Amino acid sequence: MELSNQLSNVDVNFLKSSPQLQLIDAMTDYAQKNKSVETLPKLYGYINYLKSFNDGDTELNLQKYAQIINELKSIKKTHSNID
Image (tube, rainbow, N blue to C red; front, side, top):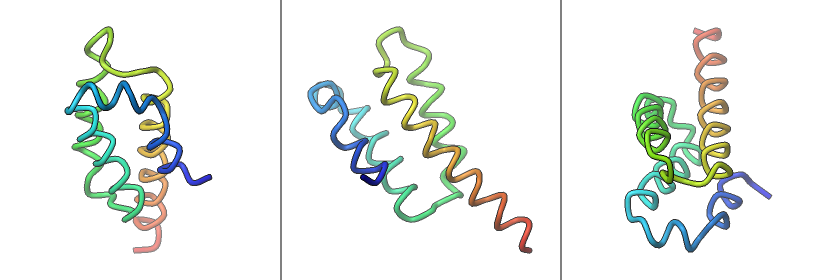
């Protein structure tokens, strides 16, 4: 199963109760699907924001967001090596 689909299925009730989490979920999904490495600074900010709260998001979601960031960093590194 693609990671973005997994994200959509993780803690749906938790996401529904927090609109800001829905935004972050949507941003990470968009970034992954479109390989949008230019969104990395925003994604770093979102993840750090969530981590600043004890109940900012579930650990599983944070791990999956971090995995998407790592995928994008890898894509960015590959593209910079090609140029």
